[in-house]
Amino acid sequence: MENTRVKSKLVISLAVVSTYAAMQFVPEFYAYVIFGKDRFNAMNYTTLLCHDTNVVLCFIVTLCLAGFSFKKMLEMLGLNNGLATAFLLALLASLPMIVGLPLLHGFRHGVSFMDIWFNGIHPGYHEEIVFRGFLTGILVRYGKWPAVIPLILSSALFAMGHLYQAHNLPESVTVFLMAFGAGTGFYLFYKYSNWNLWFPIFLHSFMDTSTVISNWNGNILMNFQDNIFRGATLAIAIFIVVRISIKAKNKVEPLA
Image (cartoon, rainbow, N blue to C red):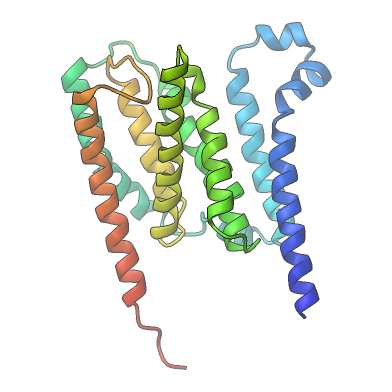
């Protein structure tokens, strides 16, 4: 029994780590195997294609680890329940940014659905499923890794993906640290919302969308006024997950 359990944890760990490693070659796969480099480089929304491929890979690998049980796959990724509640709570938490940034900078006229999808909704579901639900969540919950290891790893990888926003070394360091903290924060939102990934997905998407529908123009650091509204959103989100965590701990299981 013990050998089976250890083997299971080993298989899970190898599957998750190797899948994430394979994701790094998805752009090359499309560029050199499917479309050809020149055609791929000329295409629109190649980032969206590659990122959505990563999400599909997460679902396929998790489905295999779940013994081809769709219900168990959703459970392993934290997507098995609480969608509607998470949507409403994340929207409530995000209201300071959704209202505040357009008030500060004005509404962006002519913003398209594709703008909102690509720059607002898409980063939320892609990054939360890949980094929090798949890479960190499965390694911690099912691979039984000490949380600090996948947390540091996933937050660092998440932060590296935001370095394009920096223009010099000091700014790169600051952007990295801010994004690292954001990755850690979204993991904590996931964990303390009773492993409901829908909450960080919607929260992340709403926060990003607030920058798309306004004339805001900056990077993850934001300025002092912007950070007042972001801080208010995070404070509400923290309050919400603390309440969820307390409620879960105080829940009394019925007697058998």
